[in-house]
Length: 537
Image (cartoon, rainbow, N blue to C red; front, side):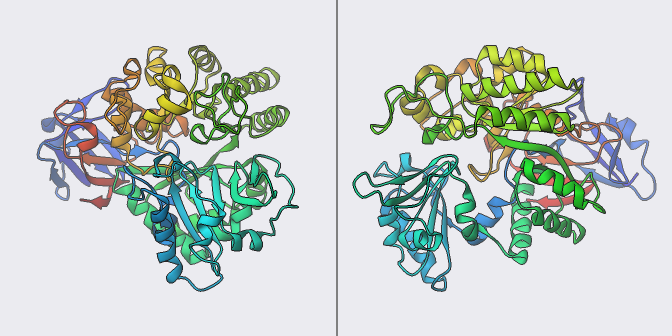
């Protein structure tokens, strides 16, 4: 045996919820688990014995949905505009000042990009506009991206660079906001492809590698051993992931969800040839069928609660693509054998996605599809019944309860819907496999805080919102480990501490099942991938 860990609480997350005292590792895999006495019988002359000293070991956390490595890119190259409790930007003057500070350090003509502003948390209670960002600079194109990642605003220099004026056409999805009198663009883009600012977001090869390294450090420090590229649209980025893995600069395992139009090209070019599929694997086609609740673009079956004055009184959002397009894309991906992940925040969007999945399955019957509804925030009880019947996995954005729960109840969807958003308990009582995710960089990556949010359902103001949808710490941890492994078709190699599986592990300061310490206050002491430490506190 290479290594034996003893004197700890080892929460295996196996089918019997076994708690062990010791674990033996050799060749990067779990060899045995059990009592300290039994496992120590397996030691040899060269075995390293590590005393956990009462600490707790779990399977490494699996990121069920985020946009790796965007947090790394944001940390290194962009301006943080987040408001409390994530950041410190509290008003428009602070937005402008932070961007101005970046402009002073940036050559004239180069893009300035800020990320994470939240209009509902700024003192002015509005989005920045072109005129605000003109105060940042007239010599740099400037973009500020909303925390939802579903809208952004640019300054006049950027509009000129992009060739967008009063004559510019209407995008296929979403809209460009315009002044009612002059028809001039205000600089605000809603649910419009980020291809408009692709130049601003583009990174060089070396910058991408640096972003990968930075994000890997951030994720490993939170106990994550498998991460996810939640929407790959740039084939070249796969090559950079391969390079980072081969150069041992990316110790995490990576699951990739790709936009459908590049899946065929990836396979035709055989881009993943030569890389260990246990380190980097392409599993899914990712689609968007609606937008974000907090910018009124999620597609609901009933109107929003407090509707902005410039929208119809019965406004309930809209689909991001035509229903026929959704059906066609899901059918094609399903027929070709792909797992399909569909972004749906609103229940009307979920209805359409379930209809599409059912139709595809009826036409091309498959077993074990494990299709995913991503976010599923306003999913109804009848929809969960249908999802279970179809074998579809809901992946809940549980941290919305903490970061936006107060405003969901008061503004966006009202108390009734807010109190059952991300209804994990409803999934538990149906014996459904489900996952929970952070959608980073929308919110910071932090699995234990995510689990705490699903367990407590407490908002940033301290309000408990939807007590009936609370789940146990064990169920929350399953959503971060074995259920997340199931979602990515990797449950035979990771997600639990069992003989034969990879030694992907996390060591915590306290037992999350004991109730002694809040989940959010437990520290990650060490993260281990394939038996090798990749992070220590």
